[in-house]
Image (cartoon, rainbow, N blue to C red; front, side, top):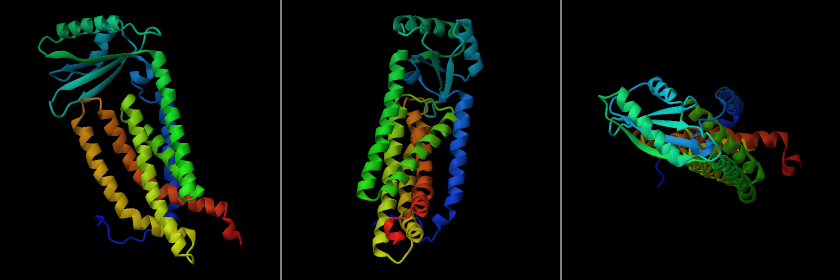
Length: 314
């Protein structure tokens, strides 16, 4: 038996669809403005190429102090990400250095990390400082990974449209694809605002969000389709509202349980590579839950109003 956290609801989602469209439109525009101001997302070296060096300190220091040390060593164009590890209490800084040439010299990078460590130890002798990890990626590989990530998302959108169009209805397919694009875009904006860097795990996170949003949309769409067949006297908007309300409790239960895991990972995996994945999933689940109620089916209602079906015309 499905766990229910809500009693029977009668929310008129279709009536509030324009409010949802305005809120979503504002978030989409704000995301665009944010990305233009920041010059794009916080790409990691997996996408840009270059070197990533992790440095841990027993006591907290500011990113400005780290930047000053790196500047004295000749590295001025660096990105620094501060990560607090809740489980150990240590602070780790991920230092991202852009590639100097098309092919990054890994041996030279190891030499630089040694010099950098010695410089930190000389300036902060009372601290326990160590290199926690090093990674080097060529700029060419980073650009290739960007295009592959975009291609993977585009293929996903196309397959979603075809699948839902065949199984349910193309209007629901279009609504679902728009909702998925909406979820990915707004999630990208929020994690950029939060300073989350995008590395290779981000691809997995965004594809997981696509799958999560599609699954949620299919559940709602199938419920609406069943109501349309059994309640032929009711209008589309009425069936849409009834379908969303019928699936609302299930949607919330799924979202809350998924959020519990994602938030736990975000809190306790602060110093690990899984942190970006956890943060993207946390934001994506929240946005996906919202879009399943206020984007997918309301878009179908609006499309049916503008492009009524043949049966409706008769």
